[in-house]
Image (cartoon, rainbow, N blue to C red; front, side, top):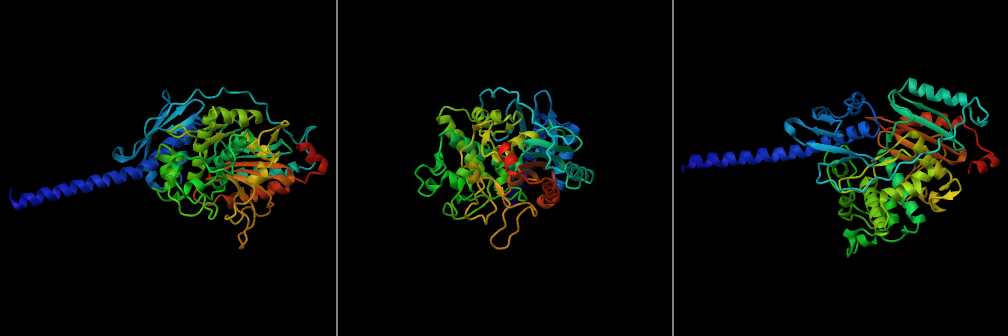
Length: 467
């Protein structure tokens, strides 16, 4: 063979290798976007029950231009959604299962799950409309109505639902077109507070002690990781490395949510960067590790995770619409994927307002509310145990929601999902929406302050009756 032919063959081989490598890289990049679109479209259509024409392309407006190149195909009979980029790159598939919502199935075989817990009928929320014998004297109904009406008329923050409950009664709620009181809303990171609630229920049942090392199988015999406690994980102070960067396509959090089969397992295998309890870092991986480990602990006790969640929390408080969505391995993605109506999100907030007691039954440990709202030592007062806090920081950091007390603590999720728990006025406020491309807190803060100011303080008798 001539030298010239040898060179040409070698050059061709190199070119093919470069093309293949570039194709693999492109496939990996597109896979995240395809996974996102398949998962979200599946859940919004089959869990939230929204019209396909509203979800596609509406749900993906305002996202990077590259996302427009990812096509989506919905199969109603099979209840599946497929998404892929140009030339078939990054193909992703999400499947819907009754009672379990949607799961990305492109990361391997989907683990079988037991039949979901049977549904239950819930008593409706008690309401206190302004013209009724149940009207609350300390509520300025006109001011609340004005605040919500104006918010939805000039809806630049893209509110989808707002509900206000005082003394355990709904005093007002409002929804954007295409949504109503029966629409389940995606949690995003509000799910973290749900995960903490299920840990609290497990503590109340005697299944675990938060001060014990977390029994993660991968950590057996590891001198560093075996020291990490449930408490360290709950307070986001485990010291485990994790990249919570949504603007980086191949970041840890994006790969975990939209590519990996075992979300908690990814965090379990993370390296240790800090000693437990010394450094605070917000990590969705940590929460998924909590959910996965809780599932394993419950199974060792002979309890199914999903059945336990319903029997210990959701059914007693009447939250019949809650859906916990699992990853491919069968563990709940406890950081991000929980669906519930605004009314059922409010029930979860009300449970904390009532110190973990519902209809006289204690569902959470007596000190659990105080525990979740006690600041993590290294968080500058902004974070408790899977709950956000409204405290001012020690070095001049201002509270997230000015004009609302420091005692408020809250569930919070991407694009402005909130459950605000406001003890001094015995009030819960739920806000769902899609505030995209800008920080949501400054967009929601003025409305929350208006609602807060429209409700007076309870006297001792009213406060005691509400408990």
